[in-house]
Image (cartoon, rainbow, N blue to C red; front, side, top):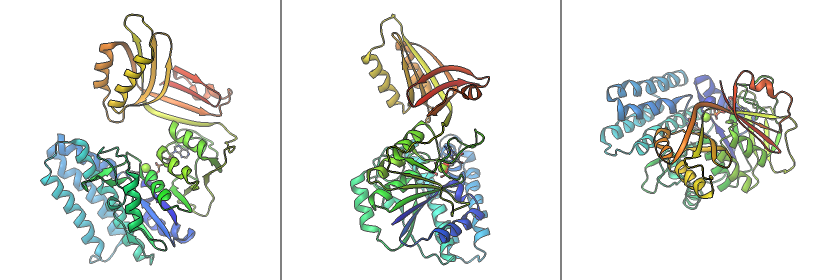
Length: 417
Ligand code: ADP
Ligand code: ASP
Ligand code: MG
């Protein structure tokens, strides 16, 4: 079986949905499973619905209407006949969403978030399912909540591999074309969960692993994995073939073209991952596969914006030892703040971290009661794999360098504009 994952950009409007047919016709679609994300920026729009549900009730109807308008524009462009079954299916989904909003009693933000935000993927895959049928591409719509089983860590759910494997094996058979949702799953009580923002690549890898797929292909708006994000760097170079290890490092450091959790389930079973352009499906793109010696021949540049740089020093001039460090890390973990660089000296300790869930103010209070603390918000973290010393000034430009760390393969710099 082959797994194809279509991300938000590849289904962001009716032209791109039509293009999905073209991609499938070019590469073939027998015995395949399609995973799709929410269309365009729908997840952000549904995040606003969730926010309004809790904090701005008057705005909730307008924010739901935006999601409806966006999808109905696409549907009207794809399906001319007003009696097409798509209209009933989409109406049903919006009715279920409204019913949830009217009946929910849970004050748990993350739980409510998952119940609302999961509609993005349900809507997109319903549209794709019917559109592909209209293109004579027979396919079965599968609800990922019946397949991907997780715990109850809403917004960042952890996959229960055993029950996921059981459900997938019960429901997915070979020699069909399936379409299912990325990013979403369900908890043991059947409530929707999500796997973390941008998690659809990871869903594709979970299916790939459990179904022992021949390959997983993620369709992107770039020609493949490049040596830098073309949004921030000029003259990027396509990496045609990289090892799992290289890809995992690039993704971990923030090359957002592949979600970092995607590689491990594929590497485990040596399933190749292709990263290809949905605009030029005939091109090779990037192959990520086994081959420990595969290494890009060029430096790779990764930038993560909107990071935090936090420096802590002991108040009594004592050393920062293992005990302090483990206490500090417990707090980072507790507040779900992800640390990407660590540097320490005798009495001080610095980390560059990302506060996706806006918990820094709470953490700050706790840390500053124990340590002398200084911090910078909104800094950028540059990581250069296989760095060369020439060219570094160009990256730095007139930015201020706050922290630098170099090891054999990788240089990291935290900078302020
Ligand atoms: P989707 O959500 O549609 O699956 P993403 O937007 O998450 O796709 O990923 C594609 C984007 O990743 C590109 O548009 C590009 O800006 C960005 N990107 C970041 N780093 C890289 C890289 N090293 N190579 C290619 N694209 C990259
Ligand atoms: N729709 C989700 C998001 O935007 C998941 C994904 O696109 O991968 O984060
Ligand atoms: Mg995405």
